[in-house]
Length: 123
Ligand SMILES: Nc1nc2c(c(=O)[nH]1)N=C([C@H](O)[C@@H](O)CO)CN2
Image (cartoon, rainbow, N blue to C red):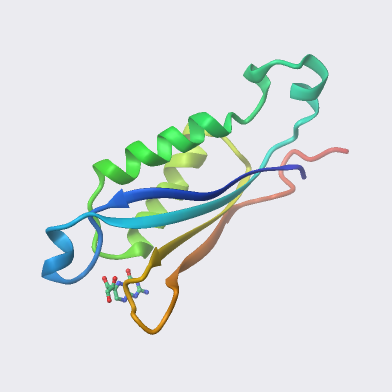
């Protein structure tokens, strides 16, 4: 299926298992790939039929700023679930990086996929 993507979305979050991490905001960087059949949007040239990447971006910013978790796992699982519920994409792959928190590494993080990429694909 076609995909809409967002790359390098930076959002500051309260996240982490250590006490000091609960007192500060740290940058997180998100990358998303979202399955979406773009043919109706292309045929009508109407944003209403598109998966609006600006709306998805703003949803992620709000969600991440409002929720406080210890683990990236908790954040990413709930964010993926909330995105699918809000926007109805049949599948998404989402990655979160925590840059510069582990000094030996450029970034650490997770990547998950949720949903069925081929659901409703009848091309
Ligand atoms: N798999 C994970 N490992 C770790 C996490 C996490 O969220 N998922 N978090 C931490 C600390 O909060 C880290 O940011 C600082 O070392 C450690 N490992």
